[in-house]
Length: 269
Image (cartoon, rainbow, N blue to C red; front, top):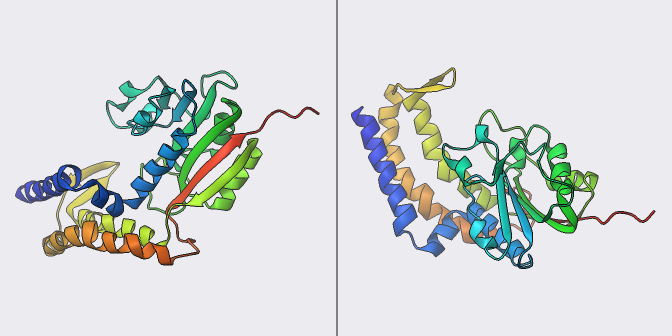
């Protein structure tokens, strides 16, 4: 148990450094995925007229609510997939396959890092389109590659071609589907979680969904490497890789995509 307390203290210290003591610009370049999503949603929010009605679909803890202070902001999520207490933040609860709102309710819908967690993504995109007014904006982000997470609710990752197909089949016109960084941002994100990912495999055993503390001999060897890895993988390498990413022109190994679409107007035919 002393080992657990040690690791917990180390994690708490670096969480304090990261969340309270790290300058904002360092925080941005050491976590480019989160920063790129925030920047995208902030830019979309500037397109929204005052008083417009906005739905944040799969909003979690509503990290982007403040961007829509000029609009009528609503949020929803599904209780089985969010942390305790988060549901109290939302306007209503629903499965995104069946949103309890009328056709053409919203001027804009945002949906960030949610589509990989739904079993039928085409149905969800069609439902997001259904509740949008014609000419309304769908702002959506989705990963192209990342580890399995939010188990068992992680079903897919997406290429830009797959996303374009989903949007087209839902009556949406794509304004842009932009990669969120290239290979260096992707490697940086992998490295940021690598020390936790490896060490904790040797610290805990998981059976029937329950995790128990059961350190192996290898864990003792890995702890010094863990201590070295935290500053190296959390700060030093990500800062360098943030700027190196500019040399990746193709961006085929991207974290994922930021997508902006417009709901089509009904045909006169």
